[in-house]
Image 1: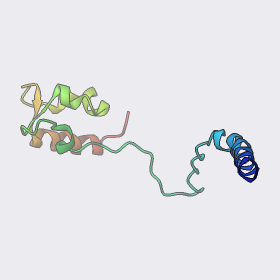
Image 2: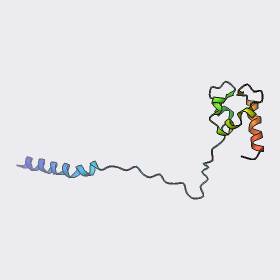
Image 3: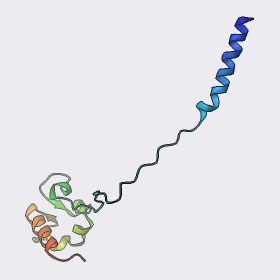
Image 4: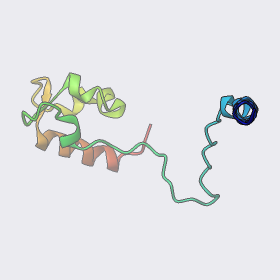
Length: 103
């Protein structure tokens, strides 16, 4: 009799705990940054090394596609017209784009 009572009590405990265990757990909502935060969401300009994915010392048109601004004036920056930017061409193009007002 005692064994039956113990089993019944254990079964009742398992059945009572089942709904609590079956509840969905919600992911916490991310906390927004505080007002006045210094988090900068402005896209940063990619460096020559960032763009030169294959590390051949040149940035091709395909590699330049990662930077929309560079893509829009690739032909002007490519001074020798070989379809690739050297580090010198990239630096000169970057310097001239900083000195001209944004469009």
